[in-house]
Image (tube, rainbow, N blue to C red; front, side, top):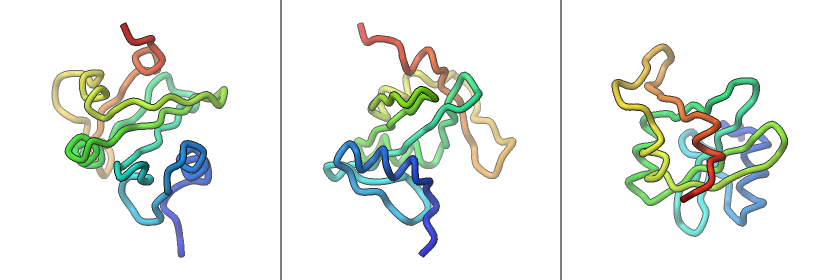
Length: 110
């Protein structure tokens, strides 16, 4: 069976005690909550897909953000909502999306 999710996504979810999914949509489940992995490559931001984000917020899910230096950080989808810029979602791909900056993700909580 083909997996929509990368080996990196599956590994990060398993390392945190979750169960990766094989189907399209969010990347896995941890403690009954959906989880989505977002990886930063060369860009200074992370792409947030509208339909997956809305599902994560509704179900109390979270994101695992991964940096090029292999560190990762878990943040609730609700908190990520507060990091998203105001305005319309971009539609230059098949799915609406917005971006969260690397600096917002790695900023220390006050």
